[in-house]
View (spheres, rainbow, N blue to C red):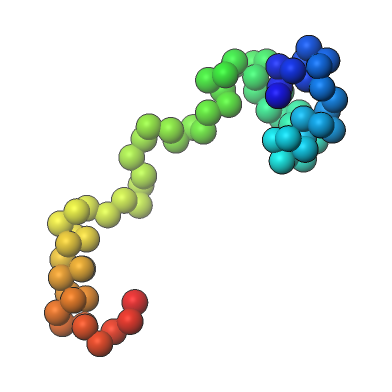
Length: 75
């Protein structure tokens, strides 16, 4: 949609409606596209491990406790 808008194939309003974004967000996307290309539009945390990710051993311990010791608790 951004390239089509730049080539004047669609209007700004139509592009915003198709992308379901506000005009301000649309122009922010256009600016990022112009400065860094397609790679600039990707989220900055893509491919990185989340900071709040729980270790598998900790998760399995919690599941074990919920199913045995706290079986009457509704999480």
